[in-house]
Amino acid sequence: MSGQEIWVAFKTLFMKELLRFSRIWIQTILPPAVTMGLYFVIFGHLIGKAIGEMDGFQYIDYIVPGLIMMSVITNAYSNVVSSFFSSKMHGHIQELMISPTPHFIILLGYVAGGVARGLGVGLVVTLVSLLFTEMNIQHPFITVGIVFLTAILFSIAGLINAIYAKTFDAMNIIPVFILTPLTYLGGVFYSVNLLSPFWQQVSLFNPVLYMVNGFRYGILGVSDINPLASFAVLLIFISILFSFAIYLLNKGIGLRE
Amino acid sequence: MSEEPYNLSVNNAPPALSVQHLKKTYENGVVAVEEISLTVQQGDFFALLGANGAGKSTMIGVVCSLVNKSSGTIEIFGHDLDTEPHHAKASIGLVPQEFNFNIFEPVIEIVINQGGYYGIPYKVAYQRAEVLLKQLDLWGKRKEKALNLSGGMKRRLMIARALIHRPKLLILDEPTAGVDIEIRRSMWAFLSQLNHSGTTIILTTHYLEEAENFCRNIVILDQGKVIENTTMKKLLSGLQTETFILDLKEPLAHLPNTNDFKLFQRDAKTIEVELDKHRSLNVMFGFFSQHNICVMSMRNKSNRLEALFVKLIKKSKKAIR
Ligand SMILES: Nc1ncnc2c1ncn2[C@@H]1O[C@H](COP(=O)(O)OP(=O)(O)OP(=O)(O)O)[C@@H](O)[C@H]1O
Ligand SMILES: [Mg+2]
Image (cartoon, rainbow over the protein chains, first blue to last red):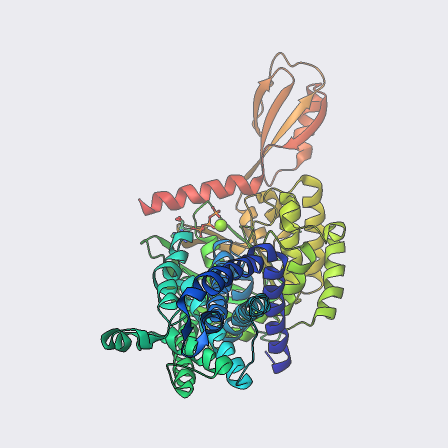
C-alpha cells in the first residue's frame, strides 16, 4: 500500500472507532462523568473537609488530577478491549485481516480510538470537577504529554488483553484484578509519603503511580515522583507493549487458527 | 456453458491462484486439509466442491489469510502470500460462508469501510458502493443496520463488500445458501457478467446444477484431498447414461419391451427411461410413436453432476477404507 492508502486505512479505522463509542455515549461517556461527580462530592467535599490538606493542597484539589487520570486509564483501556474483542467474537475483524492494511495501522487505528475516548472522558470529568473546584494548570505541556501517553499505553494494553481473551469473562479479569488495584494503589487518593518506607518502595513498582504523579505535577506542581521518571516509565512501557502487540498481530495469535 | 476443455492461461500469465501441497491441521488435531494442490487460471469460473467438512472453507481461509496453514505455498497472481502479502491480499475479494460484518453498522458503511481498508478514499468508495448496492438491489436498504436485513440480503451485502476494491479474484464460499430462486438467478447473472469482464471467480456450492451451468473447471475435495480436478465438460462426459422422466397422456396398462434402452414404470402415467448417452433421443420417440404412447412432458431425472458427485465421493471413501 502507498503512504496515501495507508493513511486512508488509518482514517477509516479511527473514524469507525470514534463513531462506535459516540453512538453509544450513554454507555461510554455518561457513566464516568456521573461516577466522578460522586467522587468529587463525597471524597472531595464531604470527607475531604475532615481530611484537611495533602501536600499543601485541599484534599479535593489533590485528588482531581488522580481521578481524571483514573477515568482516562479505564476508558482508554475498556474502549479498545471491548471494541477489539467484539470484532473478534462477531468476526468482523476478518474485514481487516483479509485486507492489505498493515498490522501497525490496525494497532494504531484501535489505539487512536482508545485515546480519543480516554481523552474525551478525561475532558468531561475535568469539566465536572470545575463545578466543585478551580484548576490552575502549572505545566500545560507536561499535563498534556502525560495524559496523552497514558491513554496510548492503556489502549495498547487493552488491545493485548482483547487478543488473548477467549470469553467475555476473560476480557474482564485483567481490568478487575490488575488494572483497578494498580490504579487505586497508584496514588490517586493519597501521597505515597503517607505510607511506611517499605510500602513506599513497593509502590515504586506500580507504573500507574508514575502516571498519576506526573499528571498531578503538571496540574498542581507537586509530585511524589520526578516527572522525568514519569515520562521515562511511560515511554519504556509503550515501546514494550507496542512491540509485543505487533508481534501478536503478525503471528495472528487469538485471531487466526 | 461447458464448451472446450478450458485452459485460460495466456502469454504465461501467472495463475490467479496456485495452491501447492497445502496442509492444515487445526489445534484440536483435526486434519482439515491433508494435501491440496490446485491451480486456477486467470479468467476462470472455478467450482470447488465437496461434502460438508471436506476442507473447502479451510482452504479458502488459508488463501485469504484468515487461517494459518501448517505447510505448503499459496500464490495469488504470482505473489507469494508469505513474502508479498500486501500484493496478494489486494487482489482477492472474499464472500465468506458465515456472516461476518458488524450487524450494528449501516449497510453502506460496511461497504465503504471495507474500501477504506484497501486504501480507497471515502468519496471514491461511496460512488462504487452506490453502483454495487444498486446492482445487488440493496440501495434502498443502505441506511439500515445490517441486523435488519434478510438472510439473502446479507449475502448480497457481502458480495458488494467483497467487490468494493475491484479484486481480480473473487472467492465465494456458498454465496447462494439461503437465497431465494429469483435472487439466485440474478446473482448468477451478475457473477457471469463479472466473469465475462475479466474477474476470476472461485466458488463453493452444494447446488450442483449451479456449478454445472456456470463453472468451467472443477475440483472435488474429499476429506482434505483433491479427488477430482478436471473440466466440467470432461467430468460430465464420464457419465454413460442419462435418465428421463416422461409424463404420459393415457394410463399405461402394459409396458412394451425394447433392447434400445431401459424402461421402468413408476406409476400408471409416469415412466422412466435410461438412455445411453450416445444414442439419439429420436430412437426413444420413434419407439413411443410405434406403440401409440403419447408423451406429454419430459424432464431429467436428477442433476447429472449430483449423481456423479455422489459416486466419486463413495469411491474415494472405499479407497480410503
Ligand atoms: N476452527 C476450527 N477448529 C477446529 N476444526 C475445524 C475448524 N474449522 C473447521 N474445522 C474442521 O475442519 C474440517 C473441514 O472443515 P471446513 O469448514 O473446511 O469444511 P467445508 O468443506 O467448508 O464444509 P461445509 O461444506 O460444511 O462448509 C471439518 O472436520 C471441521 O470440523
Ligand atoms: Mg465451508
